Each structure stands twice: as structure tokens, then as C-alpha cells.
Image 1 (cartoon, rainbow, N blue to C red):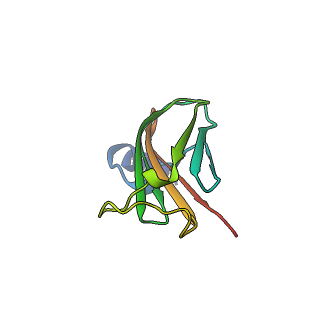
Image 2 (cartoon, helix red, strand yellow):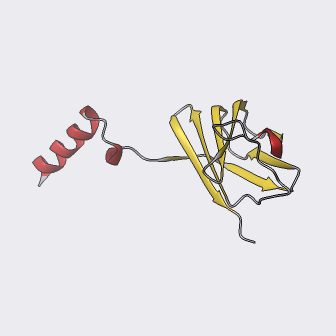
Length: 115
């Protein structure tokens, strides 16, 4: 049994399988109030290269978000791949996905709004 455990530890150290790595969850709070999205880094680490995606379609990129910092992003700054803006008067955000670089690796945040 000790040999098997030792082999598994060696495999996790030598082969970068995702199953051996822990998922990094971003510490964020995300609020929406029709005109804008407010995103706060509630954690103790700075995040860089943030990609914020609304409804699996509309995207906005943010260079950095320091620990404790809050940013306010105008709703119409989110665009799809064709350059179409998110129109807050025509649609509601249903879900948000955020990825960012952290000091420990790539981190993720997922949230939904219930109406």
C-alpha cells in the first residue's frame, strides 16, 4: 500500500494532470444594476489578465484587479465576437464566467443571476 501511495505522489509531481491539481477559485463579488457591472476582488491576492464573459457570449478584458479593489464596467463595454454590444435594456445577464491569472496559477469564478 505504501508503494502505491508513493507511486501516485510521484506521478502527480511529474505529470501535470488536472486531477492532481486543485482548481483555483477567484474571490470575487459581482453585482449588476442595469447600467453597469461592479466587480470586487474580495481576496488577498492581485489578479491579472481577467476575461469576463456574460451569458457565454459578451466579453470584456481587464488588465488587473488588485486585492480589495472594485471596478465598475459599463454594460455596453461587453461585446460579442462580431462587435455587438450587450444591450441592458433588451436582455438580462443570466450568468458570468471570469478567468484570471493568480500568483498560484489560472483561477476561475462562475455565477448566475436568478430573476
